Length: 370
Image: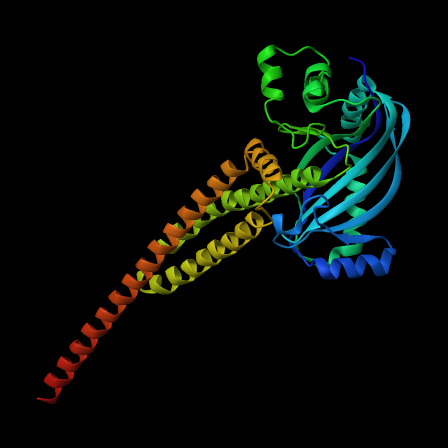
């Protein structure tokens, strides 16, 4: 079945971990004063407020239009960024599409990935990130020197040139080249896996979600599903940050413990207490931040959005990364408890030694007097 995309857009996301925390109120104020650019606090447009709950609503900043070179063609795009208080900046490039055949629409999505550098570094993203950070640098707490990154592509169709239901769309339009990024034919098993996570609420809307891409058919032009997919990517990225933080902390922790045990025993209590305090700080910090990330979005009453969100979190392996963080936190927590016990034991030994010394000196003084 040949269909044309009357209206739609290709959304290319690149998410960066830019800081430990972002002061969103200050960032909004600074951005407005220095750039006169538009800013809004995000909310899900088509979903009732009581159906979802943001921990802290992210801040969206308009970065303006730009022109991209895609396969030798000048393609207009709109740039924006959404800032999350837990330190994530989600840059977005939106390529509007009008009156384009489905094959050309799919090809544009794949060529945009290559041109923009969806899976690699690109001067486009570096330029946008630098432009952003030059303005909001003072609002960042503990900026990240070498940020981790995530990327995602969302192809959105708002209107076809003919009426088509979600079921007919899955049967008659080949979504696989767009979702896989490959021109070669896939096996039946691979095609089935790629299309497994598809969702519809009405008869004429459709969301197909994969690990690194999604296709959305949104005749009502709502952006809620696209926003939820971005939030899930932001949560994945931040959990990866904590995972790497703990990966670096564990060998450092072992080295410090070994060094402490290799010194004079009468100072063990103080050294162990100091190490235990530091590890307790790590546990408290990561625990607080992971809770903030977990609460970034809570979908309560919108069953459709909840299903999409849950599927995205599973596909992005957020629970797996979270479980890894929890295991490493448990190791740090157990080490803290062991050090705390060793510190208490060392203090008890010092007190016993002090008591024995006092008794010894008392005996010596008593003998000396007689």
